[in-house]
Image 1: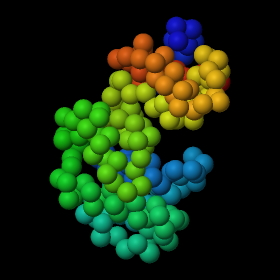
Image 2 (image 1 turned 120 degrees about the horizontal axis):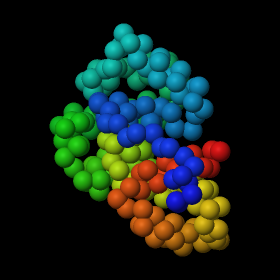
Image 3 (image 1 turned 180 degrees about the horizontal axis):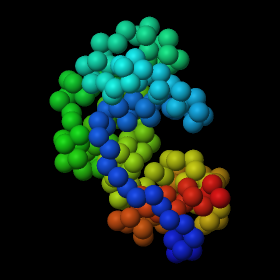
Image 4 (image 1 turned 135 degrees about the horizontal axis):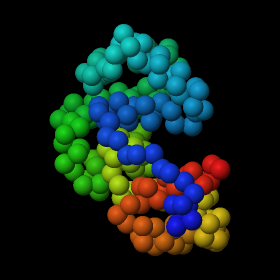
Length: 186
Protein backbone atom coordinates (compact mmCIF):
# COMPACT_ATOMS: atom_id res chain seq x y z
CA UNK A 1 0.00 0.00 0.00
CA UNK A 2 2.90 2.37 0.71
CA UNK A 3 3.99 2.08 -2.92
CA UNK A 4 0.49 2.94 -4.13
CA UNK A 5 0.42 5.90 -1.77
CA UNK A 6 3.58 7.28 -3.38
CA UNK A 7 2.29 6.56 -6.90
CA UNK A 8 -1.29 7.90 -6.77
CA UNK A 9 -3.36 10.73 -5.37
CA UNK A 10 -6.93 9.85 -4.50
CA UNK A 11 -9.80 12.26 -5.06
CA UNK A 12 -10.82 14.23 -2.03
CA UNK A 13 -13.88 12.91 -0.28
CA UNK A 14 -16.74 15.39 -0.55
CA UNK A 15 -20.20 15.11 0.88
CA UNK A 16 -23.04 15.33 -1.56
CA UNK A 17 -26.58 16.44 -0.92
CA UNK A 18 -29.85 14.66 -1.66
CA UNK A 19 -28.61 11.15 -0.95
CA UNK A 20 -31.86 9.64 -2.26
CA UNK A 21 -30.92 10.98 -5.72
CA UNK A 22 -27.42 9.51 -5.46
CA UNK A 23 -28.99 6.12 -4.72
CA UNK A 24 -31.40 6.52 -7.65
CA UNK A 25 -28.46 7.40 -9.89
CA UNK A 26 -26.52 4.36 -8.68
CA UNK A 27 -29.49 2.14 -9.48
CA UNK A 28 -29.93 3.68 -12.92
CA UNK A 29 -26.26 3.20 -13.79
CA UNK A 30 -25.92 -0.43 -12.63
CA UNK A 31 -24.45 -2.67 -15.33
CA UNK A 32 -24.33 0.17 -17.89
CA UNK A 33 -21.50 2.02 -19.56
CA UNK A 34 -20.76 5.51 -18.23
CA UNK A 35 -22.07 7.05 -21.46
CA UNK A 36 -25.43 5.24 -21.28
CA UNK A 37 -25.73 5.95 -17.54
CA UNK A 38 -25.09 9.66 -18.13
CA UNK A 39 -27.77 9.71 -20.85
CA UNK A 40 -30.29 8.05 -18.54
CA UNK A 41 -29.49 10.47 -15.73
CA UNK A 42 -29.89 13.47 -18.07
CA UNK A 43 -33.24 12.16 -19.33
CA UNK A 44 -34.35 11.57 -15.75
CA UNK A 45 -33.58 15.16 -14.76
CA UNK A 46 -35.29 16.45 -17.91
CA UNK A 47 -38.52 14.91 -16.60
CA UNK A 48 -38.38 17.50 -13.83
CA UNK A 49 -37.27 20.50 -15.86
CA UNK A 50 -33.57 19.76 -15.30
CA UNK A 51 -34.07 20.30 -11.55
CA UNK A 52 -33.34 17.65 -8.98
CA UNK A 53 -36.72 16.15 -8.04
CA UNK A 54 -37.96 15.60 -4.53
CA UNK A 55 -38.79 12.07 -3.35
CA UNK A 56 -42.47 13.03 -3.63
CA UNK A 57 -42.04 14.06 -7.28
CA UNK A 58 -40.26 10.80 -8.08
CA UNK A 59 -42.99 8.79 -6.38
CA UNK A 60 -45.67 10.68 -8.35
CA UNK A 61 -43.93 10.01 -11.68
CA UNK A 62 -45.86 7.38 -13.65
CA UNK A 63 -44.04 4.08 -14.05
CA UNK A 64 -44.51 4.30 -17.83
CA UNK A 65 -42.74 7.69 -17.87
CA UNK A 66 -39.69 6.21 -16.17
CA UNK A 67 -39.74 3.30 -18.61
CA UNK A 68 -40.00 5.72 -21.54
CA UNK A 69 -36.66 7.37 -20.67
CA UNK A 70 -34.93 3.99 -20.90
CA UNK A 71 -35.15 2.50 -17.42
CA UNK A 72 -35.82 -1.20 -17.23
CA UNK A 73 -38.98 -2.28 -15.47
CA UNK A 74 -36.99 -3.30 -12.39
CA UNK A 75 -34.97 -0.07 -12.24
CA UNK A 76 -38.14 2.04 -12.56
CA UNK A 77 -39.61 0.13 -9.61
CA UNK A 78 -36.41 0.44 -7.56
CA UNK A 79 -36.12 4.21 -8.13
CA UNK A 80 -39.67 4.65 -6.85
CA UNK A 81 -38.89 2.36 -3.90
CA UNK A 82 -35.99 4.65 -2.93
CA UNK A 83 -38.33 7.65 -2.94
CA UNK A 84 -41.01 5.75 -1.02
CA UNK A 85 -38.54 4.57 1.63
CA UNK A 86 -37.13 8.07 2.20
CA UNK A 87 -40.64 9.49 2.58
CA UNK A 88 -42.04 6.71 4.78
CA UNK A 89 -38.98 6.50 7.04
CA UNK A 90 -38.49 10.27 7.23
CA UNK A 91 -34.92 9.88 6.01
CA UNK A 92 -32.85 12.95 5.27
CA UNK A 93 -29.23 13.73 4.56
CA UNK A 94 -28.87 15.08 8.10
CA UNK A 95 -30.24 11.88 9.62
CA UNK A 96 -27.98 9.67 7.47
CA UNK A 97 -24.97 11.77 8.46
CA UNK A 98 -25.70 11.04 12.13
CA UNK A 99 -25.85 7.27 11.57
CA UNK A 100 -22.89 4.92 11.79
CA UNK A 101 -21.77 3.14 8.62
CA UNK A 102 -23.42 -0.06 9.84
CA UNK A 103 -26.69 1.77 10.55
CA UNK A 104 -26.69 3.34 7.08
CA UNK A 105 -26.10 -0.06 5.49
CA UNK A 106 -28.84 -1.65 7.59
CA UNK A 107 -31.34 1.12 6.76
CA UNK A 108 -30.68 1.53 3.06
CA UNK A 109 -30.47 -2.17 2.22
CA UNK A 110 -34.10 -2.42 3.34
CA UNK A 111 -34.91 -0.73 0.02
CA UNK A 112 -35.70 -3.22 -2.74
CA UNK A 113 -32.94 -3.04 -5.36
CA UNK A 114 -30.31 -1.56 -3.01
CA UNK A 115 -27.53 -3.87 -1.91
CA UNK A 116 -24.54 -3.56 0.37
CA UNK A 117 -22.16 -2.59 -2.46
CA UNK A 118 -24.43 0.29 -3.53
CA UNK A 119 -24.65 1.57 0.04
CA UNK A 120 -20.88 1.29 0.45
CA UNK A 121 -20.45 3.49 -2.65
CA UNK A 122 -22.92 5.98 -1.14
CA UNK A 123 -20.98 5.93 2.14
CA UNK A 124 -17.72 6.58 0.31
CA UNK A 125 -18.67 8.99 -2.44
CA UNK A 126 -21.78 10.77 -1.12
CA UNK A 127 -21.43 10.70 2.66
CA UNK A 128 -17.60 10.99 2.47
CA UNK A 129 -16.97 8.27 5.05
CA UNK A 130 -13.23 7.62 5.35
CA UNK A 131 -13.22 4.02 6.57
CA UNK A 132 -15.25 1.92 4.13
CA UNK A 133 -13.80 -1.20 2.54
CA UNK A 134 -15.99 -2.69 -0.23
CA UNK A 135 -14.60 -6.24 -0.23
CA UNK A 136 -17.36 -7.33 -2.62
CA UNK A 137 -16.23 -4.89 -5.32
CA UNK A 138 -14.82 -6.75 -8.32
CA UNK A 139 -12.17 -4.09 -9.02
CA UNK A 140 -10.94 -4.16 -5.42
CA UNK A 141 -10.82 -7.96 -5.56
CA UNK A 142 -8.84 -7.93 -8.82
CA UNK A 143 -6.34 -5.43 -7.47
CA UNK A 144 -5.81 -7.28 -4.20
CA UNK A 145 -5.52 -10.66 -5.91
CA UNK A 146 -2.68 -9.27 -8.02
CA UNK A 147 -0.98 -7.13 -5.37
CA UNK A 148 -1.21 -9.62 -2.52
CA UNK A 149 -1.13 -12.80 -4.62
CA UNK A 150 -4.35 -14.05 -3.06
CA UNK A 151 -5.74 -17.48 -3.85
CA UNK A 152 -9.11 -17.38 -5.56
CA UNK A 153 -10.21 -21.00 -5.21
CA UNK A 154 -12.26 -20.32 -2.07
CA UNK A 155 -13.99 -16.95 -2.39
CA UNK A 156 -15.02 -16.78 1.29
CA UNK A 157 -11.44 -17.33 2.41
CA UNK A 158 -10.19 -14.81 -0.15
CA UNK A 159 -12.65 -12.14 1.09
CA UNK A 160 -11.70 -12.88 4.72
CA UNK A 161 -8.01 -12.49 3.80
CA UNK A 162 -8.75 -9.21 1.98
CA UNK A 163 -10.61 -7.87 5.00
CA UNK A 164 -7.77 -8.87 7.31
CA UNK A 165 -5.24 -7.07 5.10
CA UNK A 166 -7.51 -4.03 4.86
CA UNK A 167 -7.96 -3.84 8.64
CA UNK A 168 -4.42 -2.43 8.82
CA UNK A 169 -5.57 0.53 6.69
CA UNK A 170 -8.26 1.60 9.15
CA UNK A 171 -9.41 4.36 9.64
CA UNK A 172 -8.60 5.23 6.00
CA UNK A 173 -9.88 2.22 4.09
CA UNK A 174 -11.85 4.42 1.69
CA UNK A 175 -8.64 6.12 0.59
CA UNK A 176 -6.87 2.76 0.35
CA UNK A 177 -9.72 1.49 -1.85
CA UNK A 178 -9.29 4.51 -4.10
CA UNK A 179 -5.58 3.67 -4.45
CA UNK A 180 -6.49 0.10 -5.37
CA UNK A 181 -8.96 1.23 -8.06
CA UNK A 182 -6.43 3.67 -9.51
CA UNK A 183 -3.70 1.02 -9.58
CA UNK A 184 -6.01 -1.50 -11.25
CA UNK A 185 -7.07 1.04 -13.88
CA UNK A 186 -3.46 1.94 -14.69
